Length: 256
Image 1 (cartoon, helix red, strand yellow):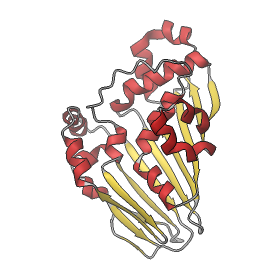
Image 2: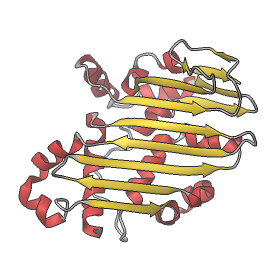
Image 3: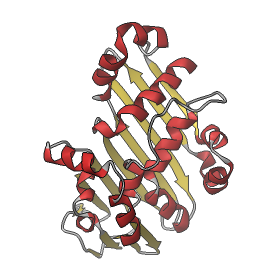
């Protein structure tokens, strides 16, 4: 299984910007300020590209042709991070990552579940979803070497897209505003032009976040936010790539 995980991590890094996935998040907020953050990525569309890229023979030799259903602790992922990152995310140690792979059924799902204890930790989770997923895939590489990742630090990735916002959490308030400095830095990255072409071609990365709140919603500031009938769940669904053209379109404030 180890070889399969290593190969899989390399493939996901290689194709993640091909818009071959969708993301669904649940943010459960308890009355005491703690809760659970869950992120589910469906990357089944990746597998056709992966098979064409590496060939049937390599799929078999790498073990990717064998179904996989495993759970990985966040602690092991934290252990594989660099020292500075370990200190920052050490509190996520009780989290879990569930990985399901079935090449024949075109199934590739990665589910991340991380409990948090306070508003500060939730802010960190919401500002760094993409980075968490990158750390997750890096953590699958159980050797002294990093995955053969050819990505350029100047390129724009998912972590950059969700990272252009400043998130604030308080008792009864969740807000997300554009960080203009981060957005300007993001727009200078060479790969932004490629992201714009992807938008023009109608490519989407569907990103859905459900906020499950302990009290009734009093007010939301963005018409894209949908409030449930019981007024305790707020949903935002959008094309992640559209942040490139209009990040303010997906800023919001939720009062409850």
